[in-house]
Image (tube, rainbow, N blue to C red; front, side, top):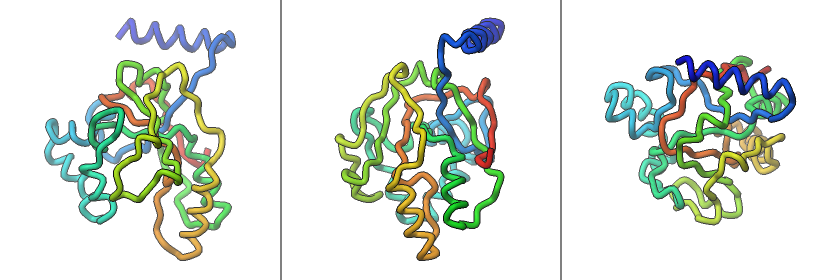
Length: 205
């Protein structure tokens, strides 16, 4: 614990000196947590069967989402639920887009703001979610739509993708429900990810 506190203090001091720029990934705060780590769904099954079934409800209640369960992730050589999913886009961009389109959403939705360094010990990839290579939830992920990610090369997105905004607009005009992060790139990480030093933020901030 002392070493952890020292490392975090060093990062903060260095950041104040302007030597580094901290970068973050974002993850919706779950309703239920196992300790101080985000854990891939398929690992939760081995740790807490009851909690696993709770999280499985969102897949079982949606034909499209259920197709994701056996979806393979190229280059990471695993399944969709063997990884923890993060967004490289600050959630406020999603919130502002919803408000611009007069979509009725809650003002307070909580996210973890996690230093990218917390993924350092894992194997990571960026799933570009490029519409050109996306064939729907039932289609395999194209290898052209994903690349392994080096932590030092990571950059946050500074705006919502146009394809995502157009999707929001199209689906809201039809009064359909839609995914908040459709066509927004994902960061996929094999392994557990600590949130001990993460900040909890609301997407309206």
